[in-house]
Length: 289
Image (cartoon, rainbow, N blue to C red):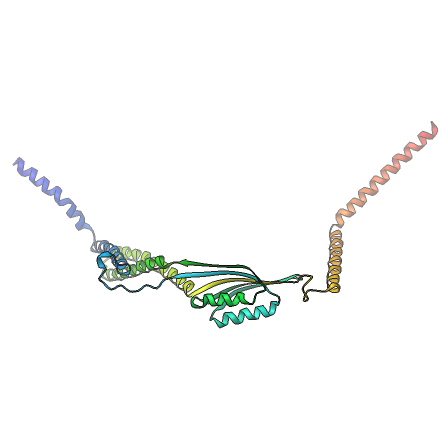
């Protein structure tokens, strides 16, 4: 009898984990299976993209290299307007476009900063054409960034998450109560946010790979030796205007400080009268002595 009781107790302890697993809802169990399947999908997708040594005989799809190219150009020109037109024509010729432009003109210098997007296939030719008509090139810098590894990894993960998303949608259709629906929808929300983030990053890289960036700055300086620079009379007139404007600014500054000036005048008059009274009091005393 004693041994029978011990055997029965051991059997009950052994059945406890099984009973706990049976208490889980079917949807939760399927969610765990799908999560494991999602991890397996990522591994499988990466194996297809980057095959290992065991799969050397399997045909692999060629992966185009993803390179982002950037250039920084800075040069001077002797004809600002002609250079501006030449740059616009060059960008149009190579199928690019001007993303932004900032121009600043002063009496002594005209300057323009341009952000250019040009197809990657025409990047080198466009750079050479832009600097070809420059009077003097101050800076020419070209950099290339290889993002192939990041692109392939991100694409594989996104495809794996898309597969897991479809599985969760199927589970959602089979949910039997509110608890199961909420659990699956929470997982779907998280997965879809990851997918949208990956899509945005991939689109960003695709655009920057397809279109290279050129940061261009050109300027024209009006020096005394330049025939197009202002002459002596014009520079004298500009100097006269600067002096007149400085005088006006000084006068306006004085007018704006009129309360202080009035206060100083009153204090001066008060002190002057005080000194006069003090002198008038001391003068008779000295005479009597």
